[in-house]
Amino acid sequence: MKLIDGKKISATMKDEIAAEVIRIKDKNGKVPHLAAILVGEDPASQTYVNNKAKACEKVGFDSSNYRFPVDVSEKELLDAVTFINNDPDIDGLIVQLPLPDHIDNQKVIQHILPEKDVDGFHPVNVGRMTIGLPSYVSATPYGIMEMLMRSRIETKGKNCVILGRSNIVGKPMSLLMARNDEPGNATVTVCHSKTQNLSEITSRADILIVAIGQPEFVTADMVKEGAVVIDVGIHRVPSSETKSGFKLIGDVRFDEVSKKASFITPVPGGVGPMTIVSLLMNTLKASKKEIYG
Ligand code: NDP
Image 1 (cartoon, helix red, strand yellow):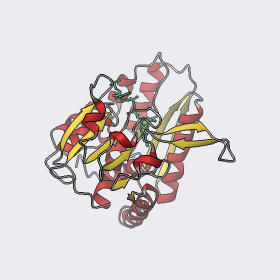
Image 2: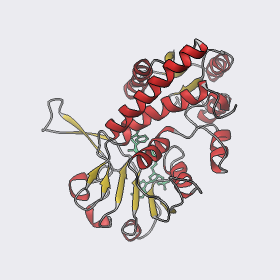
Image 3: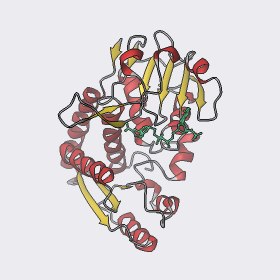
Image 4: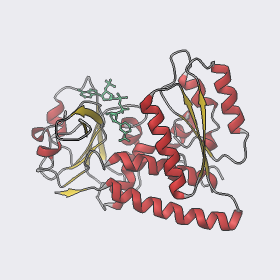
């Protein structure tokens, strides 16, 4: 079994981005700039936004956080998006989700200019990806494609089973794995909560991508000998083994599945670090106007 080391791959990608930032700065005098909108005080969302700001600093990007109280009106939020859309210094904008119930998430996402939608959530970017046009691809699927490519994992002609069909992971992942490109060209099956005979389907997978949000759901008996297993899930669970009293686990039973897999991503240190670096990669592309010219 080979571990797919997301920490190492993402560190290499960060070095590549940082080197490119120096080149861009020398040429244009401006560095890529990522803005984030955060509503409310949810600790997990605050941590995500802070981590993104730290990652920006590490590679030499500018970053700005726009924070709003939980009772911000939808209009105020849309006005903030307009303001950022019109700021020529800002290349990319992300809105940390979920937003409070009184705000229509889709309305806010669709207000972001597709050219600045580095999360790749705007229907224009989703549609462009679907038909194979240049687009911002949402960060987690983007990161997984980079992992597969950089680990030299062959996807062409393979049976790929994806557990989960969310808009941010499962659905885009299925399109990317089925596309006529490398990585891609896989024969893809998408499973969800209504899928019957799940184990039978997963047992046929050469590549199994798991994003269902169920701790340690995938066990060894569900996995084919020699499969490539990508675990997207992240769960913080109580643990007597750590100082903090918590540990992170995935959607896959790593201890037993790793004995059967040819390649596997750990949790933590697998898909997680790839997600942030992919957002940086999208922001770099935005600053270079690579997608929309
Ligand atoms: P969602 O909750 O949006 O989607 C879960 C999907 O899994 C749904 O399609 C659901 O089916 C399906 N599902 C749930 N239970 C089962 C089951 N028992 N059998 C088969 N399918 C099932 O999750 P996300 O895609 O947003 O996230 C998935 C996991 O990945 C979470 O643990 C999340 O924390 C993690 N995550 C990690 C990231 C990272 O950077 N590492 C980034 C994003 C997410 P249905 O559609 O029928 O409801």
